[in-house]
Each structure stands twice: as C-alpha cells, then as structure tokens.
Length: 319
Length: 167
Image (cartoon, rainbow over all chains, first blue to last red; front, side):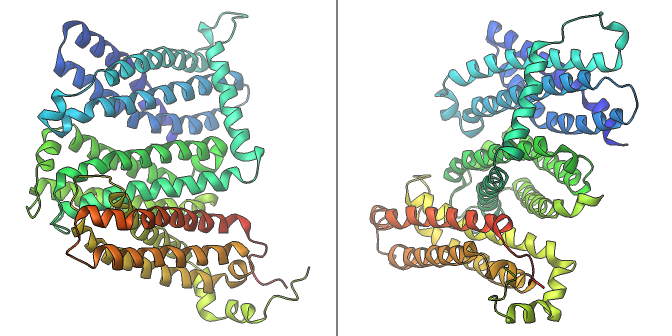
C-alpha cells in the first residue's frame, strides 16, 4: 500500500468522525447524558491523532497527481487549504476534549468538582471543525469529480484562505529569516524534553524504581508532557508545511509518524479507561499493577524509539 | 580567509581513524544517543527544579534525590557522545564561538545541579519548606541554563563556518 492509498483509505474518517462526534455531543447536552458526552470527547481525542496521517499522506496523493498532465493544481491547492484549517480546528477540539476528560480520569472527587467551560470549548471548536471538514471533503471531492463542478463557480473562500495560510507558514518557516527554522528546531527539542521527562518519570516509577514516590501527585506532571506533545505537533507541522517534499517520501519520517500513532493509541487506551484512575491511587512504596507496568514499558520504549527515528530523518533525504 | 589561523591539530584529529569512523555510519546513532542523553539529563533536572518551585506541590521532595543518579548517567552519556561528535567534526565545533558558549552553559548547569544536591538534598533533616526556600533561586537558574544549553547546542547545526578543515 502506498501513501496516496493511505490518504484515500483514511480521508473520510475525520469528516464523518467530526460530524458524529458533534452529533453525540449535542444529543448528550440536550439529554444531559454524561456517558455520551464523555464518549464524544474520547472520539475527538482519537480523531485528533488519526487525522495527522490523513493530512500528511495528502501531500503524497497530490504529488502522485501532479505527475499526470492536465490535473487542475488549483483544485488540489484549494483542498489542501481547507484541509489544513480543518486539521487545526480538529486538533484544537482534541486538546479541549483532553482537558474536559481530565477530571474524570483522575478521581471521583475531581470529577465532581469539574467545571463546565471545557465542554463549551469543545462544543464551539467542534462546530467550527465540522464546518471546515465539510469544506475539506467538498473540495477534495471536486478533484476527482470534475463532472460535478459548475462552470464559472466561485472557488470556496475558506479553502482559498487556507491555501494562503499554508503559503504564509511556508514563507515564515523557510524564507522570512534563516533563523526561523533553527529556532523551531530548538522548540521541537524543548518539547521533546518536556514529553520524555514526563513519560520517563511516570514509566520509571510505574516499573518500580523511585518507589518512594506516590503515583497520584505525579499525575500533575502529565499536563507538562501534553504541552510538550502540543509544542512538537505544532513545530513538526511547521517543518512539514515548510518542506513537504523532504518529508513525504522519507522512510524515517513515515516510520516516526507510525510510531507516534501507536504511542498515542496506547496513551488514549490508558487515559480513557478505568486503568488510569486505578493506577493513580498507587501510593508511596506500593507496586503498580502489572498492566500499568506493561503500558509504562511499551510507551517508554516507543518514545525513545521515536526520538531515535526522528534523529535519522535527515538520512532519509535521498530515499 | 583560507583558515590559516586554524590550529593544524584539528586536521590531525580529522584525519585519525576514530574521526573517520565517527563520520561514517555511527554518526546518526551517536546523535540519537546525544538526544536521549539530553532528555535524561535535562528531563530529570527539570523535574527536580519544578518540584522545588512547587509543581507538583503534593509530591514528596526528599525522594527526588534519587533522580541525581539519572542526571549523572545522562551527563556521562552526553560527555561520551559529545566527545565522539567533537572528534568527528573538530573544526566545525572548535571554530564556532557558539560551541564555547554551550560548554560554559553546561558547566553552569552542572554546577547549579551539584549546588542543589549539596544545599538541598544532602541534609535529611531539612523540612520541605526549608528545602524549597534554599533551592528556589538555584532551580530557576538551572531551568535558564539548561534552556540555554539546548538552544546553543541546537544552533551549532546552523552557525558553523567550516564543516571540516579548509583545504
């Protein structure tokens, strides 16, 4: 399977997922159904991870098309523009969803005291996401179905806005100053330290080292790790938008994204189930449950591997 | 600017077997080790510093003393991998002022960490409140120094004048 096929395989999921998530959330709010609301948050969290490869593989799909004569690049650019805005809105929705889920994953007490603003933030962000996703889907469909285009139809202004956004980011990262790229790299490394520091201490404690530390208070470091992850998703996207041709066909980059998806899936599984809350009650000197040790070992190994694979990306330039 | 004032022994190092070996295939593996050593050294220092500044407030402070073994393992990984990288590209680093800035910041960062170890963690009789008031200023300094080390280190890839001894 090649990358354009990956794009075609995955590209309907974010659109349908965002609409389904929004519908679930609306029904949950109207009927005051707590479980349904939590389910919509989890769905948005999963989609935020899943949509990253959809966006990245889109560049490969566009490259494959541009090899053929007569393909309307303006339609592809419009779709890419709508897609990047939809991606950003969905990532924002995912972040708010994690914030909204946070109290319930920690303890019953935190859950009872949870505030309502994160839910409102998810609602607003997911409304925007759903709208942008339909534009992304529509402009994407136009590429392959020229027969449905009306003669002289005005192109989507949202898509055009997104396309200029991509050009602006590319200009900023590559041409604005030779120092932008190095400082974005610097931020990517700082994000790496926040993320690995957090995953590291949580995993090491769970595996039975530093046993004098209770797990509960270590929970509070998790937002720090999430901030690191956020910094690295944003800076990583800046690299990708700056030089998509460098990354799209790069084997190390593809492997790194795959490893991040697996690590992300493990975190979502752990975070969104009862496992997380139980693990958080492990006190000083106590042994963590076996499943927690397994997850700790797997995620520590994966994040270490992700750093190593990332360091090898420049080597994949020629492939 | 034919590099006539660049010490000749940089070339001697570059022509050595070890230097050529580093520039060959293990180069990326050594860079990976250098990135992971950074995560260990700076990540562990970051957690010590943040706790001294009160985050997370309910985490017992005294057991964090044991993070120092991680800090030292990270430090020695950095020394060994850093020396290998330096042997691979001596002219590239040693003709770059940023490299000396990085070394100075590493020294400052390690001195602060050792001072923290001696003043805050060595005396088991101190209360958490005393530990925090003794460590606060040093903790802030350590965060600044490590951010400086990472930044000056990352910039090494973009600020060099010579990649190898000019011929």
